[in-house]
Image 1 (cartoon, rainbow, N blue to C red):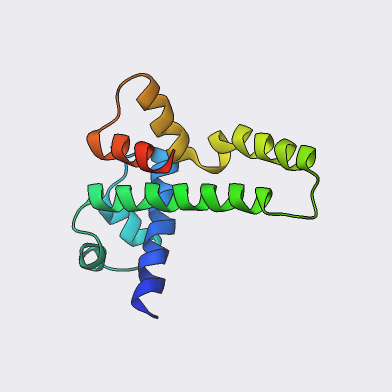
Image 2 (cartoon, helix red, strand yellow):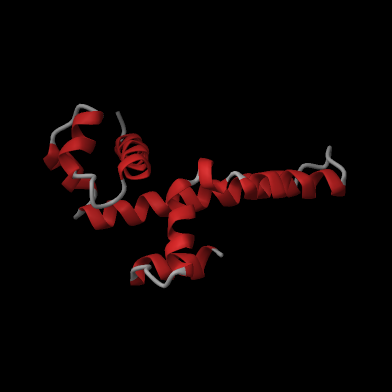
Length: 124
């Protein structure tokens, strides 16, 4: 398995854990156990749970933006249909991109951390 494959596998597993249990109730042992690797392997790729969390959020933002880009670059759809698809995508952020949704809610209520706020500024 390539390094990038392992890193991606970790990010996907962490995304599921963080989305299901939240940042504070998720620990590195659980993530490692989910993908059957040792905890030191997680720390080889990510210096801390915070660093992993930020990477997971970036990954979600990139996936969200890619899905929006696919909608607007789809020449087979009419402009009204593209807009309809976009608003459906936006409506589904709560379910499909749970961490992004959570950060937006926290931002609105002024509870985001500095790294989360910076990601919102960069991606939105």
